[in-house]
Image 1 (spheres, rainbow, N blue to C red):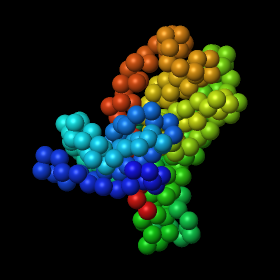
Image 2: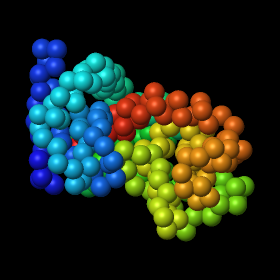
Image 3: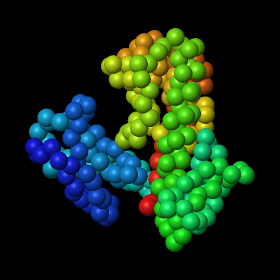
Length: 247
């Protein structure tokens, strides 16, 4: 298996046909499985590794229980999120969404009387998702860097740059050049969780690994970091589902 392109395949697990994608990654050191709402089941392979499809399938079968458990979980999350389409998840709280048709040519979302009002062109209610996504990104661009700067001053750790992106698998990252990047979807999480991610990445400016010294630094400025980590683990699929809108 030498192709650098993502490859789509399927496998039968416990009588169920499961679709999966093979993806090569320069960061991967070994074969690993990932399950997400966006991509379903992914098998991540080291970029230059020679791995046969039969070996990949054998690896998936070894992890069958884990795979089916997590696929069931994201399917449940997707169903529950669909039932809450009229509620915006923002800073850990649910805010009513009110879609209104207007003479506007482009959609726009803005806070109004305790809810999020979304104005769309007449007959174009499907454009609401675009406006809500833009609202999230704008809020993230204001809130997340502010939290980072507040923690930066306390920790005496100063990033060269703060970037807000739609990161594929991580809520935050720290580059070797001192750039801190954060997912805009984090703005849906409670502020305490945003603060933890900010502290985590700032700590990497001093400690590039996850050593005891690193975690001591994190705990010094975020005493409840374990609770925040747990919240992210348990709600990662919900965050992505509740911040993804069809257009």
